[in-house]
Amino acid sequence: MKRRQFLKSLGISIALPAYQSLTPKSLAAASGAKAAATTASGAPLRMAYCYFPNGVNESHWWPKGSGSDFTLNRTMQPLAKVKNQLQVIGGLDHINATAGKDGAGDHARASATFLTGERARKTAGKDIQAGVSIDQLIAREIGHQTRFPSLELTCDTGRQTGRCDSGYACAYQYNISWQSPNTPVAPESNPRLVFERLFGGGPIGQRRENLQRRREQQRSILDFVMEDVDAVRRQTDYHDSQKLDEYLESVRAIEKRIEDSETDTETPDPNVATPEGIPESFSEYMALMYDMMGLAFQTDSTRVATLQLAHEGMNTSYPEIGIDEGHHYLSHHKEDPDKMEKIAKIDHYYLQQFALFLEQLDNMEDVDGNSVLSNSMIIYGCGHCDGNRHTHDNLPIILAGSGGDSLSTNRFVNHGALPMTNLYLGLAQKMGLNQLTRLGDSTGALANV
Image (cartoon, rainbow, N blue to C red; front, side, top):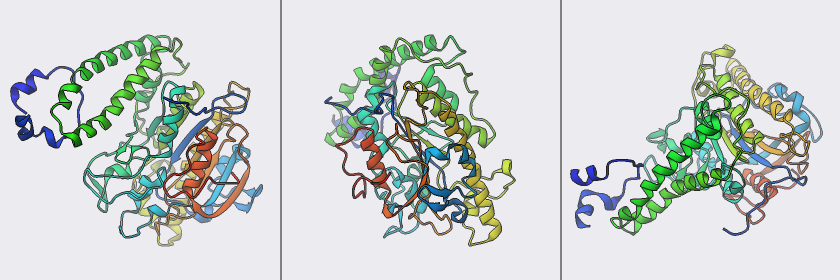
């Protein structure tokens, strides 16, 4: 691009993907009915997906007994107070996360497949491909009912470019939500930014005004940007024009969000302090992100959320609980009792924060008099079961909440080697997506949930 052309375009701008037709040579040549996410009583029905990394110590994970006659094993003891709102689920698999002909790269495949059910294309380049994740399919249908169609969070700083796991792009490992087969939805890692996005910045009492000011600035920026879209389109070929349209979907989503928010005369202003940022303590970090998701549900700011607690293969240590070795290193324990004990301790550590989150939701009264947890369906799980062998069958899954009394809770059920995506289909249909009959490798909606 010529210097004069670049300088003329200076001002307000947004980054665009690289186009083949915008190389110097090329330049020189130059809605219907929607689903209803509500319970039978008319309260909002929420769906969330929480992901933890590196598998579990199975001997301390799986409950004793079956059906309603079960007891929580050692790892799940923190969940005792909300046991009557849980289903521990076994026998669900992600066959597309297995090696197949692709060889190594189980961590990348585990993340990319977790909510899509699709096999990730093995590439470290820009030609990434997975599938549309279930949270985004739900958001497309019911996202118009709230200020934010969906909320994507992480307790990980994240990498969106480069090569990570055995020839797989980092995008697979650091994202579980996918807007399209080629476009992951990058999660937000800073709790302060999440809070300000939801409620505005500043102290209590000033957030609505600050949020409205930010919306006006966004609107002004988008107006300038969209004026130049047609000019850019005239300089692109058919392939890049399609790519531009796909990219601008996110811009249009921002526009729509601003339009919808402008109709909200009462933006929530929670009586809590704005988070200062990312805390040093990982347990506090997880707690803050769970708090953000809880506030979003409580204020009905969104009804679909994902939280990636850490990326697959994460090798951090946990000095808070006396573990100095890396998590990934310990997960390859080779049956060493000391390492397996530490994995069990890490599993328990993660579940402590999840349990506090569920207790928080259980103490929130919803509009129908039930708890927010009762009117939710929250999946907690991992794309690995045994991190030592990189297994992707019999995944460690917990389903919390009774979905507005539509789920059978307080039990342990093994479904016996069925696709994980069958569970997603069944829950999506409870969210009102009755027309959704296939996801990834699904064979039908899971019964007996």
